[in-house]
Image (cartoon, rainbow, N blue to C red; front, top):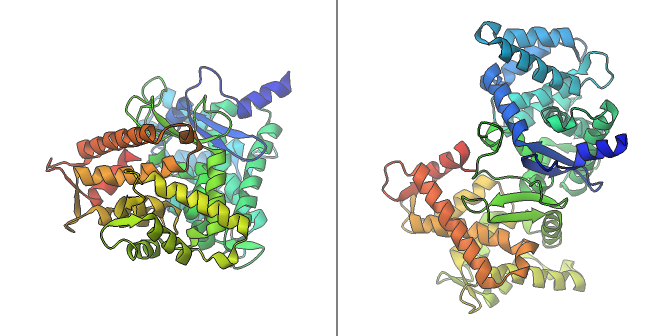
Length: 471
């Protein structure tokens, strides 16, 4: 029946679909699925149109001039598109493709079916196609929705903010083409409602009824990205390359798989074959959020964590008793009840022993702290740079192949220890998987980034490799 078909369109993966991203949007089980064919569509749109080279502000100004009283009509949209995309450079096939694809995006925001869209929502969502970083796009959109320019968004404004990005992602996926407009709108609306509620529940805010861009950013960087990972797709670099015919190339980090189950949030291939993967489930995310919520370690900056553990590891080795002393200083027990203390003791000890490779109640300080910093406050870049300095043993700004292997192994060990799927494996099996994955990753980094082949990599070279496809 029709209802069954709608559910399949929103939540199910066809057996022959090559799903690249799978994003759980809320407790109702709604899942945003993006296939390799959708990725190819996005790549073709930004490449053929040249919009991927258009500056974010230029794009915004062009549509802003065409809007009237906060509304953009379809004919004005078409005029702007013709100005931005010179037709003489396109084939008839390309013109037809772009006309269909870009009109699909416009009509995704035409909620009343009257050839009109809310300018702020449309401009925020359409910015996904332009050049610029994820942060630039998020910042511009935040200003658009900050109607009274006080630097904050209300709950409803944040809902529209997040809805704008979900709307364009759904418009780019052919999975939702045949859904009735009302069902598709409900699908997007409910996903944005869930995300908004989560931000207001978890973010540290100055005001009860609104959130600033800084507060939203801190929430996102300190774990929110695991609950709204689709926001990462504002960055074109996060869309994997696809082979001709629409299948995703190996080696790209995926967020979900066609057969990963409804609880799958991320799936990371750990080798070139793609046969070995690390699957992060909703249960893993919930457990991580519980851990940081009770311990509040996510409010401690990574530098502070390093200093606290360093006091207990003068020789480069951290004992379990030293770890326990540092944790007692970092997580005051006076604020915890007996059940919370028992839970933290068990959960944090599990993380420690994941790094105890010799079974002697001691861990390598650098590897452990690099991995444990995932729980701390600070951006991804801050944590990567801090760990890089730790593994740069001679302080020359470079790390060797072995040091890079340990660098990678630190993060993989931490992720594996937070994953319920590894608990059924022996310690030896998990170590073998982690070590092998770190070897493969190190080989890839040096193959692509060590241009002078001296077997050393700087942090800048590593960062360039990561941003240009290493992610």
